[in-house]
Image (cartoon, rainbow, N blue to C red; front, side, top):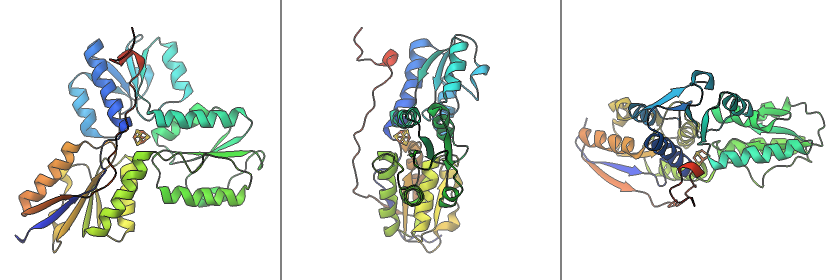
Length: 316
Ligand code: SF4
């Protein structure tokens, strides 16, 4: 590789959102308060580095609650769970601490309210994602999952005048907008949230990666392959016409990506820790001299309260 300096530009904001910080904090505090092992249903957030770090400290990750000993401390992941999982946990007398992101819980509440009022609920989201499975299982009534405009054409609700929609929190804002437009065209009386349920963190990171991709030759998105919001960031970067790679960490970098390149942009999904971004910067610096900059962008100061049992500010 050549030795001329490469500009490395970091997106702002990037990486951890308030829901992910809270979920990790919950596991750490539960370990400190109750001692290991603490059981966690599914990955607490979609990032292998985070999961391995917590596993090393005594968290045990399971697929289903029937793998957890009766009465054990159990944490539900940030993506939320269905009512069936809650019921199963109660039946096993598990000591549940819910790390579901409050913005996911808000979608659950909206969906339940629509279903209770006799609406078929259309959930815009990705089949098989943990949040989607949990949301379907929280709404209770008739839920139709749509992932594309084409899916909208296949919908057969009980009453086309009694339909409502909610959305997964980590969609592409543009894709969701197109699907909502198609829903409104097909069901003019459809009701739903004012715009969509895509969370502030997802929206901010999508705006930032668009800005970043305008300024650089190559975009790197640090995030896990199963992280929905990270995949959306990669798609948006690629959609801006720039080579855009989703990487778990610096080890996934292929130096050939930087041949003839003078600037590299880096962002990170909402579940990717900043230490992984630093690792990517250090790796680039080991290849070529770098000039590091950070874009100006939204400074987030959202914080969510901890569950009562772990809240250090609770009134005894
Ligand atoms: Fe909550 Fe949004 Fe973060 Fe998901 S990405 S945990 S919905 S703040």
